[in-house]
Image 1: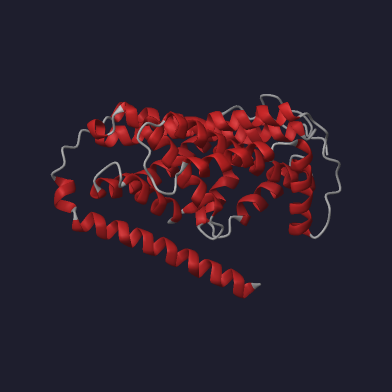
Image 2 (image 1 turned 180 degrees about the vertical axis):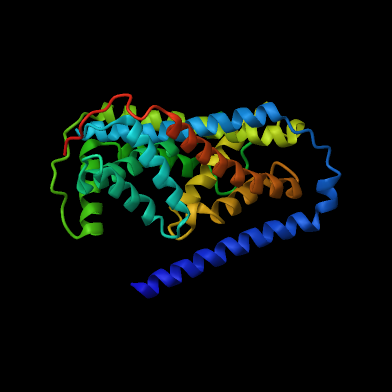
Length: 315
């Protein structure tokens, strides 16, 4: 097990080094072209993109609170937001497991058992990922100039079908129980409440809206940097690329925070729209932008009143 962890860390480290070495070399080689580009940074658009991104992170955190309520756990929403936002920072540790473990430990302090909170995390992963699939299909359908080899209609259609299928409450229950048993070598000692399909669909649409919002924020970021080269007709294309690159980073287990994988996918996708030197700048800035959005969201949550609706958690 220790050897596996060491190998995972080494692969993750090499992956990050390789991608950022490539991007750095690309920027260095084309520095003259980058320097002479007619930059007109739109600071208002840049600020708006950061605000929308930060609010999206906060609403994602609130989604976890809604899921806990669906599972009959009564918790303080502000405390849930704080726990979620803090635990998300642990995604930058290879393996991503610390992100979930940290949330379970902190949730236990609210009176939510580790079993219940781990089930809520699995539930969130299923519903949120389904939301990404649906958001990608919507963005792809609205895009007018999407010509990227690996983002193909039938692939998006399959993802959409999978997203709808796994929202079936019975299938969600089976997936949670199987995953829990595989991860913890035992079955959950709680009964997952029965709920109708439309309730999971409402939760999924909530996440779909948030992912589309984050895609819009990414377009605003790109527009704030290169303006005229990112006309409004590229909104859905760029949003879809952002979601696809995020999904690739999320599914890559060994990449901490999707670093390296997300940048690689984004670079290969954006090069069909913009000159490669500009793409390298966009990709690097987008990573800084993403981290800043998380930190701003965390700061906002911590500035909220500590007890807006203090309730005792129910195990």
